[in-house]
Image 1 (spheres, chains in turn red, orange):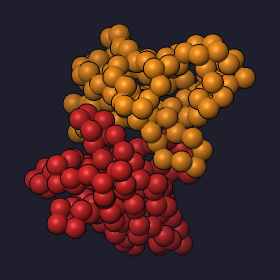
Image 2: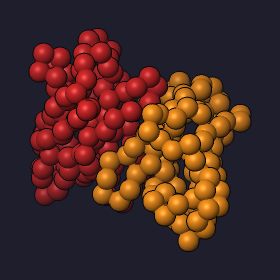
Image 3: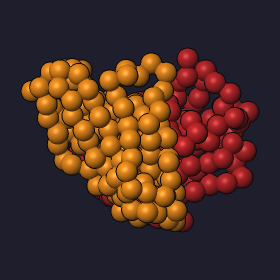
Image 4: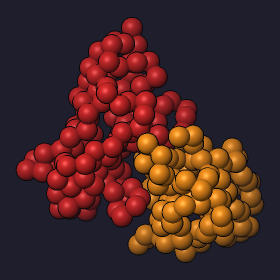
Length: 117
Length: 111
């Protein structure tokens, strides 16, 4: 069974940093593109970033370029999102998702990030 | 890259069919057959319902179907059931600087 478990969310002040983790199990992690998708409270979904199987390609939504970094450790079956210079508008539930072809086939339950003073 | 446009809400009675539209441009929906649809119940993670415009993942009811015409994709739910009440989002690959975009979301209400 595919499982994705996010962790690392919490309350952080504007300008601060946070590192999210996603532990994957139940599939060959190194064989799939992985993504982060976020959802602000009461709002819709927003794709944030994704990373190729070997980490050689990474893509970001314009609003986080230069502030967020996606990475992975295939030996640990883990996906990460380093978030720096956080803003109030980054407040959201962050989901880890496994890509299946050109869609996100499996999702974790999400971790809440709150940026507030 | 702007979000794809969906109606804010759609409703129907049990047993009826409803259709949710997802309108983009030739740079996303119209340019690629990489449209997917997600169902999200309150407080839950999204679930993939349709991929590559019209394909259903294993385990998804055949009451859900997808199609595309020009720059508009559609999700049809036939034989509407109470459990179908949820938010639905479309998504597409895009040739813009942000390679993926979601729709604005549609709340489906079963009357």
